[in-house]
Length: 287
Image (cartoon, rainbow, N blue to C red; front, side, top):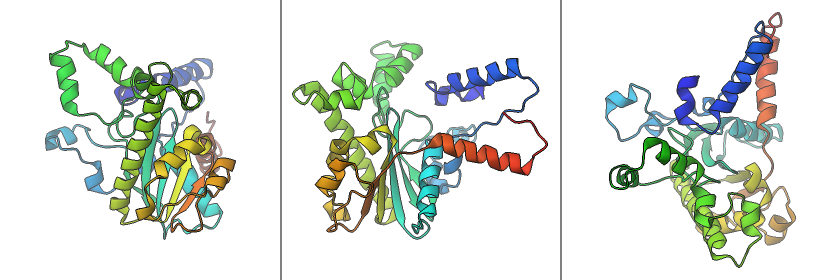
């Protein structure tokens, strides 16, 4: 698992610290890891490829996708409410300090905005999102940034924090409507989210349902409204009153696409996976 740290350096070291602590305290307990990438393992082959040489693919350089536990929770919740997830074309927008989107067909991931690492796709709290690789080369060769300095820049100094110059917190940015840098950071986030959302509809061949979740997606009506602006050609139309009031269904009756907003629960999904494991192996001690 330590080999996966470069793919998610803001998360994996903390996960490993917990594993080490439990191992030291209770070496007799088995420990189970629930990977955020697992939900995307069924993606079509083309969706996993990069444009790099094939031999690098054979060494594990491919698109994996993340936030899988959140997407799995959304799918299970919709199914429990008798939504025809298997028959609908669904996009889930997990927007928070980490942000990504997932296109679902038949209730399964067919494309997602994150790829090899947790850097790609949408801009995030401190992560840059998609970036021209030529910029990386330029920073390395012309500006003499070290690999460690570059890693810190991309993961911890960019995104909303880098663009605003003072905060990675969307709530703080929205609270400063006259601050140009804050406005620009929010506008860039929404612009990129809208662009990625539209791109995912091409993979699905249309859109029937859009679900906003994550800390921003579930709680920031202004962001939802901005992302959905000008998507009427896809059948997306929000009801401003319902959106502002924090209703579950926030789409307008005039729109063809059902738009929803609700909190995700990744911890519940981990608990469910553990419960299923315990039911299958009741004699084992599992942490």
